Length: 209
Image 1 (tube, rainbow, N blue to C red):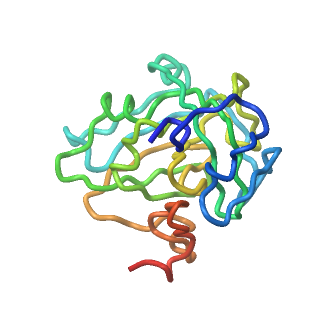
Image 2 (image 1 turned 90 degrees about the horizontal axis):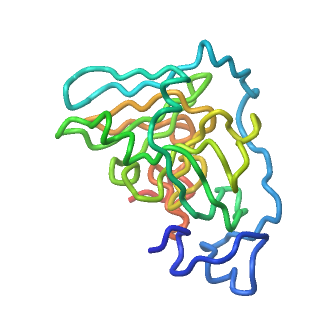
């Protein structure tokens, strides 16, 4: 599977003639990027911001970066579509930031870790299998198509997990907690599917095996 979540990359824009082949079941192409989130937009204060990795880490220690230190981590780009559980898809995005696999190399999980809880402002959370976190397309994004994310879209840091529904990629991310036993995140506790694969239309918990 290519970095865009399809077999072929296409130029950035508002979609092309064969968009139907790129869309998961039940999705529609969205020409703009709607603002959808639960709760208010947090005020960013760089002097108070930090990013943490903790829980079942390989050495048992917590890693913490302040905002300046986080900017020194290696960065990369991912070309990938975004699929929202509300049935819109935003095509032809280039996300820039710190790849999840880069972060995991710097702060690895313990051998028995199986999942991660991604924490954001106001206690919001989303759980992921480690395999999903480690996909080459998963990225802690700071920019979209060369422009910094707006506060409404997650500035200063938003997780993108393009092969899953977009709720699995929280805005305003602050931490990753490695887990040896899976726990449901914010929306998963409220009836959303624990995995969230758009190609299987895994929208709600009643669809789980």
